[in-house]
Image (tube, rainbow, N blue to C red; front, side, top):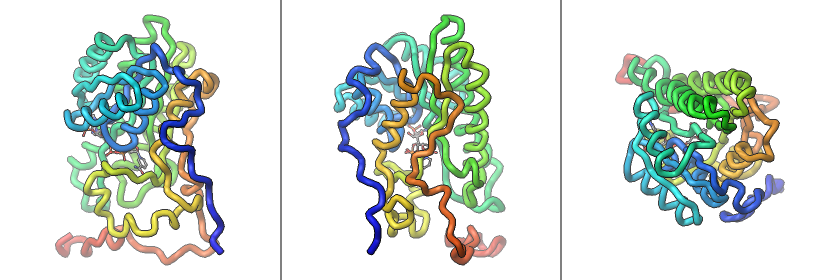
Length: 294
Ligand code: NAP
Protein backbone atom coordinates (compact mmCIF):
# COMPACT_ATOMS: atom_id res chain seq x y z
CA UNK A 1 0.00 0.00 0.00
CA UNK A 2 1.29 3.49 -0.82
CA UNK A 3 1.97 5.46 2.37
CA UNK A 4 -0.09 8.64 2.77
CA UNK A 5 2.68 11.23 2.32
CA UNK A 6 2.64 14.68 3.87
CA UNK A 7 -0.58 16.15 5.24
CA UNK A 8 -2.60 18.62 3.20
CA UNK A 9 -2.08 22.23 4.33
CA UNK A 10 -4.68 24.28 6.23
CA UNK A 11 -7.24 25.92 3.92
CA UNK A 12 -6.73 29.10 1.96
CA UNK A 13 -7.50 32.01 4.27
CA UNK A 14 -5.86 30.45 7.34
CA UNK A 15 -2.74 32.02 8.81
CA UNK A 16 -0.18 31.07 11.44
CA UNK A 17 0.73 34.71 11.99
CA UNK A 18 -1.49 36.99 14.06
CA UNK A 19 -4.07 39.02 12.15
CA UNK A 20 -2.65 42.45 11.35
CA UNK A 21 1.00 41.33 11.48
CA UNK A 22 1.70 43.62 8.53
CA UNK A 23 -0.72 46.45 9.39
CA UNK A 24 0.92 49.74 8.46
CA UNK A 25 3.62 47.99 6.43
CA UNK A 26 4.31 48.25 2.71
CA UNK A 27 5.50 45.15 0.87
CA UNK A 28 6.59 45.06 -2.77
CA UNK A 29 6.21 41.82 -4.72
CA UNK A 30 7.84 41.75 -8.15
CA UNK A 31 5.83 39.63 -10.55
CA UNK A 32 3.06 39.68 -7.95
CA UNK A 33 0.25 39.45 -10.50
CA UNK A 34 0.65 35.79 -11.48
CA UNK A 35 1.27 32.36 -10.00
CA UNK A 36 3.36 32.17 -6.87
CA UNK A 37 3.95 35.92 -6.72
CA UNK A 38 0.20 36.50 -6.68
CA UNK A 39 -0.20 33.98 -3.87
CA UNK A 40 2.56 35.71 -1.90
CA UNK A 41 1.06 39.17 -2.47
CA UNK A 42 -2.33 37.86 -1.36
CA UNK A 43 -1.06 36.45 1.95
CA UNK A 44 0.74 39.70 2.79
CA UNK A 45 -2.48 41.58 2.01
CA UNK A 46 -4.49 39.20 4.19
CA UNK A 47 -2.17 40.06 7.10
CA UNK A 48 -2.73 43.79 6.66
CA UNK A 49 0.11 44.88 4.36
CA UNK A 50 -0.33 47.45 1.62
CA UNK A 51 1.12 45.56 -1.33
CA UNK A 52 2.91 47.05 -4.33
CA UNK A 53 2.77 44.74 -7.34
CA UNK A 54 5.57 45.54 -9.79
CA UNK A 55 5.58 43.92 -13.22
CA UNK A 56 5.32 44.66 -16.95
CA UNK A 57 1.86 43.45 -17.96
CA UNK A 58 -1.14 45.55 -16.82
CA UNK A 59 -3.49 42.54 -16.93
CA UNK A 60 -1.16 40.62 -14.62
CA UNK A 61 -0.95 43.53 -12.23
CA UNK A 62 -4.73 43.94 -12.22
CA UNK A 63 -5.15 40.24 -11.36
CA UNK A 64 -2.71 40.61 -8.47
CA UNK A 65 -4.45 43.70 -7.12
CA UNK A 66 -7.84 41.97 -7.36
CA UNK A 67 -6.54 38.92 -5.47
CA UNK A 68 -5.06 41.01 -2.65
CA UNK A 69 -8.27 43.05 -2.38
CA UNK A 70 -10.38 39.89 -2.31
CA UNK A 71 -8.36 38.82 0.73
CA UNK A 72 -9.19 42.14 2.42
CA UNK A 73 -5.90 43.88 1.65
CA UNK A 74 -4.81 47.02 -0.15
CA UNK A 75 -2.76 46.85 -3.33
CA UNK A 76 -1.31 49.03 -6.06
CA UNK A 77 -0.02 47.82 -9.39
CA UNK A 78 2.99 49.67 -10.83
CA UNK A 79 4.56 49.19 -14.25
CA UNK A 80 8.14 48.04 -13.91
CA UNK A 81 10.71 46.06 -15.88
CA UNK A 82 13.15 44.93 -13.20
CA UNK A 83 16.03 44.87 -15.71
CA UNK A 84 15.95 48.68 -15.69
CA UNK A 85 17.30 50.47 -12.59
CA UNK A 86 15.53 53.72 -13.48
CA UNK A 87 12.21 51.91 -13.92
CA UNK A 88 12.65 50.29 -10.50
CA UNK A 89 13.40 53.66 -8.90
CA UNK A 90 10.30 55.14 -10.53
CA UNK A 91 8.09 52.25 -9.46
CA UNK A 92 9.38 52.34 -5.89
CA UNK A 93 8.87 56.13 -5.82
CA UNK A 94 5.24 55.65 -6.91
CA UNK A 95 4.62 52.95 -4.32
CA UNK A 96 6.18 55.12 -1.62
CA UNK A 97 4.06 58.12 -2.63
CA UNK A 98 0.81 56.11 -2.81
CA UNK A 99 1.20 53.50 -0.06
CA UNK A 100 4.06 54.75 2.12
CA UNK A 101 7.73 53.86 2.64
CA UNK A 102 8.58 50.30 1.63
CA UNK A 103 9.34 47.87 4.46
CA UNK A 104 9.80 44.58 2.62
CA UNK A 105 10.58 43.31 -0.85
CA UNK A 106 9.87 39.94 -2.42
CA UNK A 107 12.09 39.41 -5.46
CA UNK A 108 9.80 36.90 -7.15
CA UNK A 109 9.80 37.93 -10.84
CA UNK A 110 11.57 35.58 -13.23
CA UNK A 111 11.71 34.54 -16.85
CA UNK A 112 12.33 30.95 -17.86
CA UNK A 113 11.94 28.35 -20.61
CA UNK A 114 13.59 24.99 -21.24
CA UNK A 115 16.26 24.71 -23.93
CA UNK A 116 19.35 22.53 -24.35
CA UNK A 117 22.47 24.66 -23.69
CA UNK A 118 23.87 24.10 -27.20
CA UNK A 119 20.65 25.52 -28.70
CA UNK A 120 20.50 28.56 -26.43
CA UNK A 121 20.92 31.94 -28.14
CA UNK A 122 23.07 34.66 -26.54
CA UNK A 123 19.88 36.73 -26.22
CA UNK A 124 18.05 33.95 -24.37
CA UNK A 125 20.94 33.57 -21.94
CA UNK A 126 21.24 37.30 -21.33
CA UNK A 127 17.50 37.85 -20.95
CA UNK A 128 16.98 35.23 -18.24
CA UNK A 129 20.13 36.22 -16.34
CA UNK A 130 19.13 39.88 -16.65
CA UNK A 131 15.68 39.33 -15.15
CA UNK A 132 16.55 36.75 -12.50
CA UNK A 133 19.97 37.83 -11.24
CA UNK A 134 20.39 41.45 -12.29
CA UNK A 135 16.75 42.31 -11.54
CA UNK A 136 17.00 40.80 -8.07
CA UNK A 137 20.16 42.78 -7.35
CA UNK A 138 18.81 46.06 -8.72
CA UNK A 139 15.55 45.85 -6.75
CA UNK A 140 17.39 44.90 -3.56
CA UNK A 141 19.90 47.71 -4.00
CA UNK A 142 17.14 50.24 -4.58
CA UNK A 143 15.31 49.29 -1.39
CA UNK A 144 18.53 49.28 0.67
CA UNK A 145 19.38 52.77 -0.60
CA UNK A 146 16.01 53.96 0.72
CA UNK A 147 16.19 52.20 4.09
CA UNK A 148 19.82 52.78 5.09
CA UNK A 149 19.86 56.61 5.09
CA UNK A 150 16.58 56.66 7.05
CA UNK A 151 17.85 54.13 9.61
CA UNK A 152 14.81 51.95 8.85
CA UNK A 153 14.87 48.14 9.13
CA UNK A 154 13.62 45.94 6.33
CA UNK A 155 13.31 42.43 4.96
CA UNK A 156 14.06 41.01 1.52
CA UNK A 157 13.10 37.56 0.28
CA UNK A 158 14.62 36.25 -2.95
CA UNK A 159 12.58 33.51 -4.59
CA UNK A 160 14.99 30.90 -5.91
CA UNK A 161 15.05 27.38 -7.26
CA UNK A 162 16.75 24.22 -6.00
CA UNK A 163 18.78 23.82 -9.18
CA UNK A 164 20.87 26.65 -7.70
CA UNK A 165 22.55 23.80 -5.76
CA UNK A 166 22.34 20.96 -8.25
CA UNK A 167 22.47 22.53 -11.71
CA UNK A 168 19.43 22.34 -13.94
CA UNK A 169 19.74 20.45 -17.23
CA UNK A 170 17.53 22.20 -19.79
CA UNK A 171 17.63 25.40 -17.76
CA UNK A 172 21.32 26.46 -17.87
CA UNK A 173 20.42 30.17 -17.90
CA UNK A 174 17.90 30.07 -15.06
CA UNK A 175 19.89 27.61 -12.93
CA UNK A 176 23.06 29.71 -13.18
CA UNK A 177 21.09 32.88 -12.40
CA UNK A 178 19.35 31.28 -9.40
CA UNK A 179 22.75 30.09 -8.11
CA UNK A 180 23.80 33.72 -8.35
CA UNK A 181 20.68 34.78 -6.44
CA UNK A 182 21.41 32.30 -3.65
CA UNK A 183 24.98 33.60 -3.39
CA UNK A 184 23.78 37.21 -3.51
CA UNK A 185 21.34 36.47 -0.68
CA UNK A 186 24.24 35.39 1.52
CA UNK A 187 26.41 38.40 0.65
CA UNK A 188 23.66 40.98 1.14
CA UNK A 189 22.56 39.40 4.42
CA UNK A 190 26.01 40.07 5.86
CA UNK A 191 26.44 43.52 4.33
CA UNK A 192 23.05 44.80 5.44
CA UNK A 193 22.49 43.12 8.82
CA UNK A 194 24.23 46.07 10.54
CA UNK A 195 21.44 48.27 9.11
CA UNK A 196 18.66 45.99 10.33
CA UNK A 197 17.91 44.58 6.89
CA UNK A 198 17.41 40.82 6.68
CA UNK A 199 17.88 39.00 3.37
CA UNK A 200 16.69 35.43 2.86
CA UNK A 201 16.01 33.01 0.04
CA UNK A 202 12.77 31.09 -0.51
CA UNK A 203 12.88 28.09 -2.81
CA UNK A 204 9.68 26.57 -4.22
CA UNK A 205 9.49 22.96 -5.27
CA UNK A 206 6.92 21.56 -7.64
CA UNK A 207 4.05 24.01 -7.11
CA UNK A 208 1.74 24.11 -10.15
CA UNK A 209 -0.54 27.06 -10.78
CA UNK A 210 -2.88 28.36 -13.45
CA UNK A 211 -0.48 31.04 -14.77
CA UNK A 212 2.40 28.82 -15.82
CA UNK A 213 4.05 30.17 -18.97
CA UNK A 214 3.41 28.14 -22.12
CA UNK A 215 7.03 27.04 -22.58
CA UNK A 216 7.09 25.49 -19.09
CA UNK A 217 3.60 24.00 -19.38
CA UNK A 218 4.61 22.41 -22.71
CA UNK A 219 7.43 20.28 -21.27
CA UNK A 220 6.49 16.73 -22.33
CA UNK A 221 4.86 14.77 -19.52
CA UNK A 222 4.91 17.72 -17.11
CA UNK A 223 1.41 17.17 -15.76
CA UNK A 224 1.36 13.38 -15.72
CA UNK A 225 1.44 11.84 -12.25
CA UNK A 226 2.88 14.94 -10.61
CA UNK A 227 1.96 13.91 -7.08
CA UNK A 228 3.76 10.59 -7.48
CA UNK A 229 6.98 12.34 -8.44
CA UNK A 230 7.45 13.98 -5.03
CA UNK A 231 8.46 12.18 -1.79
CA UNK A 232 5.65 14.13 -0.10
CA UNK A 233 3.12 12.27 -2.26
CA UNK A 234 1.63 15.53 -3.44
CA UNK A 235 2.65 18.74 -5.18
CA UNK A 236 2.82 21.96 -3.18
CA UNK A 237 0.09 24.57 -2.91
CA UNK A 238 0.96 28.22 -3.68
CA UNK A 239 -0.24 29.27 -0.22
CA UNK A 240 2.37 26.99 1.40
CA UNK A 241 5.09 29.07 -0.24
CA UNK A 242 3.29 32.32 0.50
CA UNK A 243 3.00 31.50 4.22
CA UNK A 244 6.77 30.94 4.31
CA UNK A 245 7.32 34.35 2.70
CA UNK A 246 5.14 36.10 5.28
CA UNK A 247 6.97 34.28 8.07
CA UNK A 248 10.45 35.18 6.76
CA UNK A 249 9.61 38.91 6.62
CA UNK A 250 7.89 38.93 10.01
CA UNK A 251 9.28 39.83 13.44
CA UNK A 252 9.07 36.10 14.30
CA UNK A 253 11.99 35.51 11.93
CA UNK A 254 14.00 38.36 13.46
CA UNK A 255 17.26 36.37 13.75
CA UNK A 256 17.02 34.59 10.41
CA UNK A 257 19.12 36.14 7.67
CA UNK A 258 21.21 34.70 4.86
CA UNK A 259 19.17 31.50 4.88
CA UNK A 260 17.47 29.85 1.91
CA UNK A 261 14.31 28.03 2.96
CA UNK A 262 13.29 25.21 0.64
CA UNK A 263 9.55 24.49 0.44
CA UNK A 264 9.44 21.36 -1.71
CA UNK A 265 8.28 18.30 0.23
CA UNK A 266 11.86 16.94 0.35
CA UNK A 267 12.03 16.63 -3.41
CA UNK A 268 15.42 18.04 -4.23
CA UNK A 269 17.40 15.65 -2.03
CA UNK A 270 15.76 12.54 -3.53
CA UNK A 271 18.05 9.78 -4.78
CA UNK A 272 17.36 6.22 -5.88
CA UNK A 273 19.64 3.43 -4.67
CA UNK A 274 19.82 2.52 -8.35
CA UNK A 275 19.13 5.55 -10.50
CA UNK A 276 16.54 5.21 -13.27
CA UNK A 277 17.91 5.09 -16.84
CA UNK A 278 19.43 8.42 -17.88
CA UNK A 279 17.62 10.45 -20.55
CA UNK A 280 19.59 13.25 -22.27
CA UNK A 281 17.93 16.65 -22.14
CA UNK A 282 17.28 16.82 -25.92
CA UNK A 283 15.32 13.60 -25.64
CA UNK A 284 13.41 14.81 -22.56
CA UNK A 285 12.36 17.90 -24.50
CA UNK A 286 11.50 15.91 -27.64
CA UNK A 287 14.17 17.65 -29.74
CA UNK A 288 15.95 16.03 -32.71
CA UNK A 289 19.76 15.62 -32.56
CA UNK A 290 21.68 18.93 -32.71
CA UNK A 291 22.14 20.03 -36.33
CA UNK A 292 19.32 17.84 -37.60
CA UNK A 293 16.52 20.39 -37.37
CA UNK A 294 16.96 20.99 -33.64
P1 NAP B 1 5.29 33.09 -13.39
O1 NAP B 1 3.84 32.86 -13.16
O2 NAP B 1 5.85 32.89 -14.76
O3 NAP B 1 5.57 34.57 -12.92
C1 NAP B 1 6.67 35.29 -13.31
C2 NAP B 1 6.35 36.75 -13.00
O4 NAP B 1 7.51 37.53 -13.25
C3 NAP B 1 5.22 37.29 -13.84
O5 NAP B 1 4.24 37.83 -12.98
C4 NAP B 1 5.86 38.39 -14.67
O6 NAP B 1 4.99 39.51 -14.75
C5 NAP B 1 7.09 38.74 -13.86
N1 NAP B 1 8.20 39.21 -14.69
C6 NAP B 1 8.85 38.51 -15.66
N2 NAP B 1 9.80 39.28 -16.21
C7 NAP B 1 9.73 40.49 -15.58
C8 NAP B 1 10.46 41.70 -15.72
N3 NAP B 1 11.44 41.84 -16.64
N4 NAP B 1 10.13 42.74 -14.90
C9 NAP B 1 9.14 42.61 -14.00
N5 NAP B 1 8.42 41.49 -13.82
C10 NAP B 1 8.72 40.44 -14.62
O7 NAP B 1 6.26 32.26 -12.42
P2 NAP B 1 5.95 31.40 -11.10
O8 NAP B 1 5.85 29.98 -11.49
O9 NAP B 1 4.85 32.04 -10.32
O10 NAP B 1 7.33 31.56 -10.34
C11 NAP B 1 7.53 32.56 -9.36
C12 NAP B 1 8.95 32.40 -8.82
O11 NAP B 1 9.11 31.08 -8.30
C13 NAP B 1 10.03 32.58 -9.87
O12 NAP B 1 11.15 33.23 -9.29
C14 NAP B 1 10.39 31.15 -10.25
O13 NAP B 1 11.71 31.03 -10.75
C15 NAP B 1 10.23 30.47 -8.91
N6 NAP B 1 9.97 29.00 -8.99
C16 NAP B 1 8.74 28.54 -9.34
C17 NAP B 1 8.48 27.17 -9.32
C18 NAP B 1 7.10 26.59 -9.63
O14 NAP B 1 6.87 25.40 -9.43
N7 NAP B 1 6.14 27.37 -10.10
C19 NAP B 1 9.52 26.28 -9.01
C20 NAP B 1 10.78 26.80 -8.69
C21 NAP B 1 10.98 28.16 -8.67
P3 NAP B 1 4.82 40.39 -16.09
O15 NAP B 1 4.65 39.43 -17.22
O16 NAP B 1 3.57 41.19 -15.80
O17 NAP B 1 6.06 41.24 -16.19
